[in-house]
Length: 461
Image 1 (cartoon, rainbow, N blue to C red):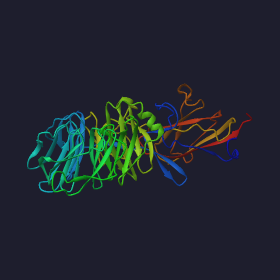
Image 2: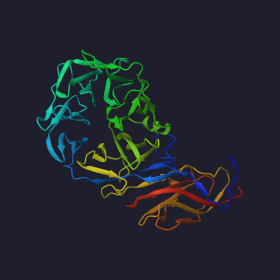
Image 3: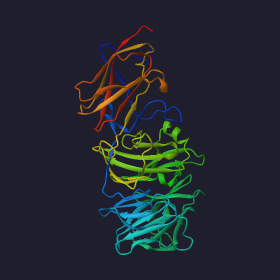
Image 4: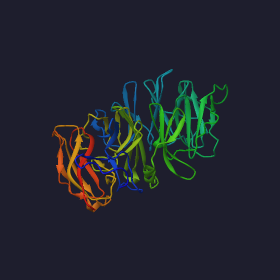
């Protein structure tokens, strides 16, 4: 026996639920994981929930690629296929091949600012309409992102020059209003704002600037000692939620981690299993988005060449995997608040836990437990399997097991459990030395799973 003593056979033994992915290599084929769900710390351990679902909004357009989403002064703006829409009505076309980022100026003439990630930027207001910004000579090759600070809008180019606008005037840019992020000789990747700082994300480093009120050239000056030794692998992975920043980082050695910046402190939040997945990626097509609700805040990272969407729960500090109805990555290109933009559908959705499917398509929740041996290398005889979950009319789970280290061909057939029963259970579930369980839920209902209890006897070998 590894630790302790074998429990009284009359007292059920609790199988540990999957808490976060534990893949042993750079695939998700084996080991514990949660798909289309998330975990929440309860009084007696973790609870498993089905992820929030999608409901179609009224602002959808003809099927086209989604390039960005934003809500401004009560209206919803979205770029689909290179056309900017306001509440589903076209405002004009834009030159774009990458995800847009949106910002705003409320002083002077309130204006929406849009950087396109393909070296151009626009602004929109009710006076001028949608306007392509003409920058001074030399101000070219802009990267994705912007930062509005103290009445000035800042952008950055690939040479890590940070340029500032006129005060609350997106049509005014002068070539002398710039400062270079040059602690390291790497190229600029993305620009963002954090607290009262401008954050320059570069290839393998990150620099921080503040408004020093300089009388000439740029108002910005570098924050001494604030250099961060992680850069940015892709501008499309940079997201802000509650004033904090998250992005997929890279170093000179081309190692990849997800970084979380809070109160100007940057820390890796990707686990070793997640980083094993990232190490295999080509990052040819990457998207990121966020969702917040019901006490949780999520950062979502989609890597298309891996057919994978990873969901990071910031408050729980846990990861899971989310998919579409066919088991592929979630085809979401951007989000703002509770609104979600489809990647190629021309559709905008609202996302909430109260939505129990994805606009009519079922959500398949899968939970694979860790391998379980009850801390003893002896044969266990399972008399009864009891699933503890919320009693919900119409909610059914399927459960199966694998006694051969997740070998795909050795999963048993699913057995069905009705969660509207008072105490749902299965009898006579065989014998094992080590076992993993797989629970699947495909019903148009909510799901909260508390535990799996096994009533077992101990064999002689």
